[in-house]
Amino acid sequence: MLKNKFIKRFFLLFVSLFIVFPSHSDEKSTNKEIVNNEAQDLISEKFLDSLWNNRENTDGENQIYLFLSKETPIPKEFNIAWKVARLVYFYGNFTLSEATPKLDKIKLFKYGYEAGKIAKELEPKKVEGYYWYAINLGSYGLSKGIFSALSNAKPGRDALLEAAKIDPKYQWCGPLRILGRYYQEVPGGLISFGDKKIAEDYFNQAIQTCPEFRLNTMYLGILKKKSGDKTIALELFKKAQTLPEVDGKNEEKRYSKELAENIKSVQNM
Image (cartoon, rainbow, N blue to C red; front, side, top):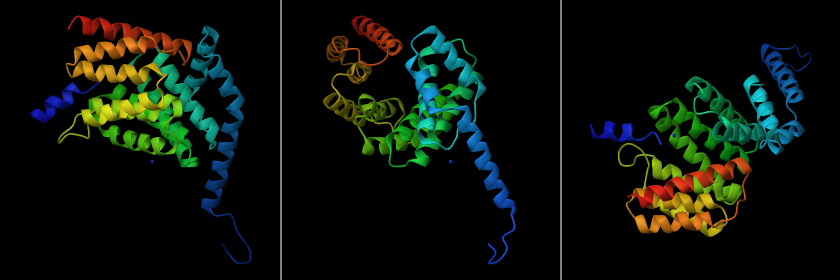
């Protein structure tokens, strides 16, 4: 009963020596290479960079939509794979309408985490694949439902732990910040690994290392608000409002809105 109660509350998360005849496996390998080359021809890094750089205008958003809706196969090319995953994250979280059907969201974020998975497997010593894989996997789980979010929480967390080892400062301390969110939102005890103290430690690390990014401070404020520390939460939210806008226009607009909503919420407590 208690376990079910916690699960319900949580919604806010793989030769011959002389004459070589082509074997069946050789044919499959050749076919994979052909598919990969064709996919790489369809998605260039230059094209993805153009989509990203123009994401803040209406035409750019439409181009991103047209590209993602095709679900073009991801080639085995590191920069292409992680940049596709990054586009999915942006479009799914900052452009996609809240009225979008659930199945469409699931399909989108699945495409995103699969792109991230390709990237992390191609370059296991680089941060981008792990980070964008975890971000999209979390969104995929939340879009699909409570149980999916819970089952995907551990692989998402483990990917972020790897990202934090490689480059904790990536995306303004994104690995540390999102680890904090994982530990804050996931249930603890017998259900999963959630732990508010660990979450607070990660948020503080993010603030100390990347103090200019407002989400690091805002997320600690949200943790304090949920813990009932109204005064500290309000101070953190107001501090976050004074920080510079270092992310994209659409992203910062969302952050400002969330900050205002949190301040109002604390003041009404």
